[in-house]
Image 1: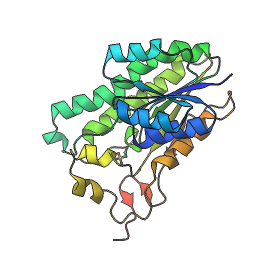
Image 2: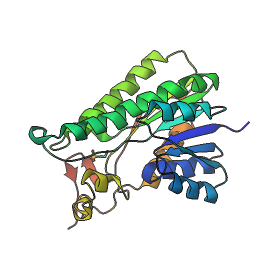
Image 3: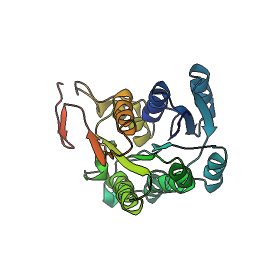
Image 4: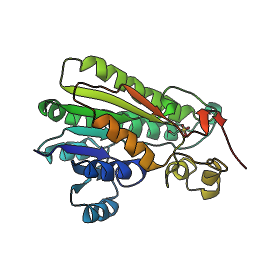
Length: 246
Ligand code: 8X3
């Protein structure tokens, strides 16, 4: 019997890398995201991947995804992201709302919808892709860190509530990961500003590094729950302590 993994936000970055990696690990992968053309390409390349159009901010879209699944053994709540780097005093309510909507409420919607199937599987894994921003604050990051703290808190609550059910609740919290879109989205398409985030950092993490960590957590024996895995590049000892060579 092949196990099914659902990955949200699978059209790029960590989500796409995770979909690829879990397919390589032998899962049937449902790659879910809004941008269907990208998913179709991925599925054309890898037979074990099935594309699913998903908007985590829509109840109907999430219900449709849940209804389309025969089973779900692994859920990777990866859809998320940051918008803006304004200080709290200049914080834009719409940005904060969007970040809360996708990172927190999006994870809530998908989790609620797929939890019965995860329990039914007899060995489910619910993995939340949070961030070091889930337990650290930094200047300008107010809206994002608030949302990620919320997601982390939801993860901890779920683990308590599901104790006794056959579902592991895992949090993977990456630090600096250079992907094609994270910083670009945060800076509303300003490529120069986005590039500066990683400037001089010898080796930021890649999406594949995080997918590797996710795959490791997911493929532990059923009784082993990795509560939280924090992963950063060697050059980042802490949120503000980043080694740069130029
Ligand atoms: C991304 C890491 O440092 O931008 O989740 O908050 S950081």
